[in-house]
Length: 282
Image 1 (cartoon, rainbow, N blue to C red):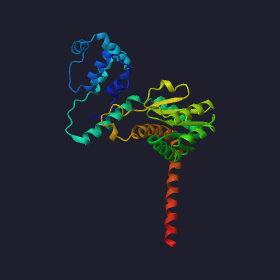
Image 2 (cartoon, rainbow, N blue to C red; image 1 turned 90 degrees about the vertical axis):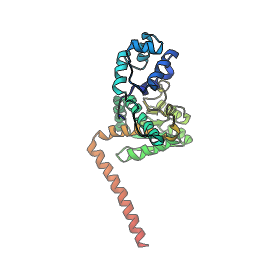
Image 3 (cartoon, one colour; image 1 turned 120 degrees about the horizontal axis):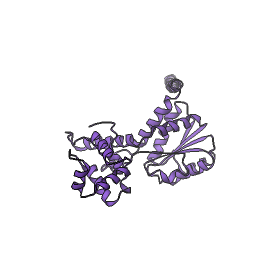
Image 4 (tube, rainbow, N blue to C red; image 1 turned 135 degrees about the vertical axis):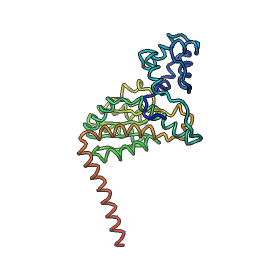
């Protein structure tokens, strides 16, 4: 299996709901295809009983200039289905690989760099989410705190509403909601933005509905199209996105951040040593 490929298939899946009936028939072919075939516009038009103009419109809705560019990208990342591994192991690894490929297709490095800059400028950072997203917010707090970010996390909806009152132009608020439908998180972002804070939403939902009150909307891959999504940790795409953000922020003034990280490790080791000493004197 080929890794870190800017695959066409995740892009098709992300845009699937926007397609017409004819375009969905084209999309279904490219999503399900596992064989090397003639992908020229004429051959595909005959194969799928569509016009060459429909192929062109389909490619443009996927973000390409035309069908030729789309096919070039598709062929360059096409891998025939020859894996010998079977059963649950193969299913799980393929699911994680698809999530990695989706992330590679969605990530906007300029946007990540901007958010990394916001982290460096903010006096206070707050990460919030509910359920699995809340666990990811707590992980974000732990990791970014260790490299000097003044960050807290909130997982309770009522606390989010109360904490929103205290945000201002010196704050940076992260909301994590894979579905984009967690009302307490959205309230936190709306109210914080109204009070002057910068706001960042991490979601798998379409970004347009959130632009009014979010400084940035970072798209994450979704488990929606994975047949075995219920056995893949829903935290995985969130943590993957946070890892990318962490790497960008940590690269700014890298030496100082590495010193802070080492200091936190020494503090933890010192606390454990003190505990051992006290335990030995009892």
